[in-house]
Structure formats: C-alpha cells, structure tokens
Image 1 (cartoon, rainbow, N blue to C red):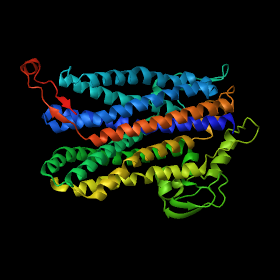
Image 2: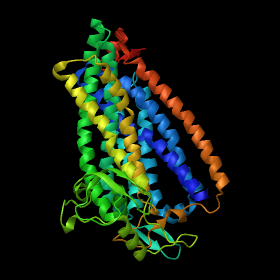
Image 3: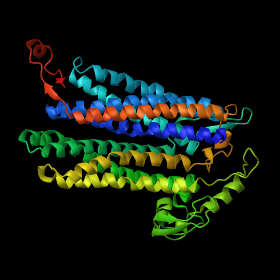
Image 4: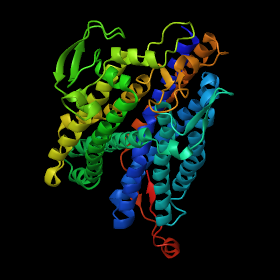
Length: 498
C-alpha cells in the first residue's frame, strides 16, 4: 500500500476510535449536571446518588477520550504536512480556540468538581459541573467549525504567492451554515447516546433488583433507578426529534454544497426526478455504478431529503455519473500520476454507512418506547427481555454516531478540502495532495500498528472500568452529623461510603 492509503487508514482508525468517547462526554456531562441540580433544588438523596454514580462513569470516559484525542493533533504534522501547510492559517484558528477557551475551562472546572465535593459550597460546586457541561459542548462547536470549513470553505482567500489559503474573516468560519447545521445534529446525537446510556443502565438495574422480590430492593428500583431511567428516556425522545430535524436540514445543505455526497448516499447512478430512498440494494456498488439494483425503495424520499420536493423539476437529484462529469469539467484536476480524478466517493462505504447511521437508531427507539410502556403509572418491571434490550441498545447510538462520522468524511472524497460551489475555486485540496511527501509507507505502518495496539489496550481498560463501576450501582450515602460539620456549612454536600 502507498503512504497515502496507509495515512488515511491511520487517521480513520484514530478518529473513529476517539469519536466513540466524544458523544457520551458531550451528552452525559449536562445530564450529570441536571441530576446534581435536582439534588440541590430538592434535597432528595436519590439525585445525589445518581450524580455520583454517573459522574464516575463520565470521568472514566472523559479521561480515555482526552488520551485518544491528543494524538489527533500530531497527525496533521506527521502524515498530513502538505495539508497543514495549505490550510494551517485557517484550520488552526478554531482548534486553538477549542484548546484555549473550551478544553482549558472543562479541564479546570472538572478538577474542581472532582476534588470539591467536601470543600466547596454545593451551589458553587454545582456551577463547576455546569461549566464543564457548557465547555464540552463549546469544544464540540470549535472542532466542528474546523471540520465544516473543510466541507465548505468560507472566510478565506487564496494567496497565489505562497500557495496557501489565508483566513480573512473568522466570524464567517464560526457562522458557516454548514457548521450551524452540523452542530445541532452532532449534539442531539450525543444526547441520544447519553440518554440511551443512562436509560439502559438504570433499566438493567431496575430489572435485576425487582427480580429479587425483596421489598427493599424493589423500593430501591422504584426510588432510584426508575427516576434515572425516566430522565434518560425524556432525553432520548427530545434528542431523537432533534436528530431527525437537524439531519433533514443538514441533508438539504449537503445537497447544495456536495451533491456527489447525496447521490453516493443513495447510490444513485443517473439523475432522477422524484428519486426514491432505497432500503436494500444489490449488485456492484463500485464507483462504476454498473449493475446496481435498488430492490426496495421508499418512493420520492431521497429527492425530499435532498431538495425538499417530492416530485417535479425541483426534486431532481443528479446521479454520481452526472456529478463526475460536472466536476471534471469545472475542476479538471488530475492525480499526481496524471490520471483523471475520480470525483465519486466510495459508494459501498457511503451507501451503507448512511443506512447504518439511521438503522441503528431503531434500537434507541425500541428501548425508549419499551421503557415508557413498562414503567407507566409509576410501575417497575422484572422483564428479562427488557434488560437484554437495554444491553443491546447501549452500543447502538455509539455505532450510529461513528457511521455518521464515516459517512461525512468519506462522502467528501476525493477532497480533503471540498470546493465551495459559490466561493473561490482555488481554495480546494485533493486528499492525495495533502499527505506528507517525506513520510514513507514503512513509517506510517509502524505508527499505525503502534497506535492500534495501544488503543486496543485502552479499549479493554475503558470497558473493564465502565463495566466494573456500572455493576457497583449507586453508592450509599452517609451524612456527617458532627456539630462542627453542621455549624460550618449547612449546605455542605454529603460524603459517600462505598
């Protein structure tokens, strides 16, 4: 394999692995903050116990996410130095803002939250976790700003003397319409992930406790895990609606900016009015588009997703063959070997990643609806199938988010910086032109193997820690009743015994 292919594989492995932890952190931090807010406002110990329980899982996930995310920065200089040279003036700005304004805040206040339980007034302590929750979402905004610029470059000029893109309007980058669509879609998907995580763990514990038939365990399930599960289900329902609405908006913007991505998502070979959305496709999903047969279709849906019209001229979707012809005529770039550029992304990957992204959400829907039915009117349940569904549903939104990320990035190919259809044509870069010219295949293989093995170890550590503390359940609480503690601060939070 060439250095380009190996560099892409390495970046893909590192990015997808890191992105496993990102949605849970983005969504779970606000949920933990809501739990702690409920405790501060009501004084009910159930919310304090849930805060400590899911707060510990949040910390484990956050730590592994930080460790895997740091490697991302180094890859731009190691394997993609030509890309960094071309876009560094633009791409580096939102990343620097993320590190200085967001990551610094979340790291600082997370430390205060961890060590401030018995030292800070509980309202000040509550403000710390809310600062973390806001900062992790702000961090996501800046990172998506950088990625959205790659999808739709704005606020930039091309310097012919240096051969580089140069930033002229940071506010254009931070208000990019691609970003304004991608951010709510990503964040609501993160809340769906976190809501499913909280719901599934609480559901599993509820079934386990109720099946013991011991009154104290049934009461624990009703008093602790059912409210936690209810919070998770509400989060899932609201987030699910948000994912659908923001995804629809994003699809229409994607059609305007990257029509080839939309056509590839449907494996639509030739342009069509009122194009249907295929559920199953057979045949050769190679980029030649030969032999593709859509066996089962939802009529007109693909056209609506892209254009907002079901039928008529406004519903026309160009096929991948049309996009190839248009892009070749407009840009005419050739590969470094002098071969014509294949402007169509990998159809197999884009087609199936798009469907897996949507299809895996079914598990989240099934879990939410089942939870609502089984716990209606204050009930708790001992249905074993429900606890098994909960365990199956935990990884579903994680995988859906990962496939969504794969679709977003693979659908942009062959561009690492896709051209803005209404912008400056020179601000564009083919992926093959962004790879480092001095990095040999052997060097990339060595680093890729090392990172993959290290990440495999971290994955085992993450899973074992999350499983261990999830199986411990909510902690017991004991209040410090000493006169000194009562006189010092009546609002001081509880200590915990494990």
